[in-house]
Image 1 (cartoon, rainbow, N blue to C red):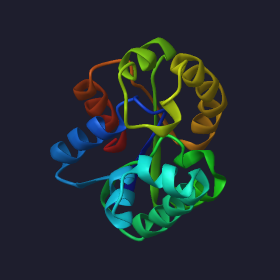
Image 2 (cartoon, rainbow, N blue to C red):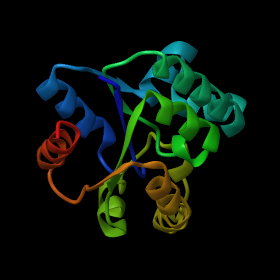
Image 3 (cartoon, rainbow, N blue to C red):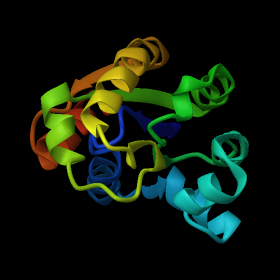
Image 4 (tube, rainbow, N blue to C red):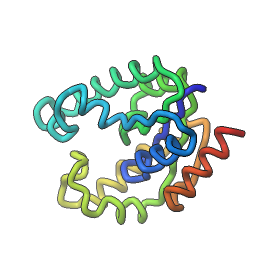
Length: 167
């Protein structure tokens, strides 16, 4: 089995849904941000703070390369991973990209109290979410071979994804 790569905006549920898919299909789950953190020995926020976003994006591309060499993984990509064509190209070769789309209002609600994501540690996070979503949504749509409405419970979305990938 090739890899299943979940993409979508931060807060769309990639990690939660990915874990549920992995449990139900008995596949290995990898959260790309956690994978990078383990390799770097620091959190994504610390990487951003100490080395900047550019270095984080380099580490992200390295993670894409390493994970694409494996098969049978359920991978939750970072929210910005697929905003780089090099990462799309790498991941497409290793599996199917599934875009989990969630409405702006739902994302704002889910990310209201977030303290982990460096790009959201600003005064008007809803404006940042709106602007980033406007830029990223067309990229996700273009990169993915499968579209899933993520405005349901994580269990329901996981079941939808499993139904599509096993079809």
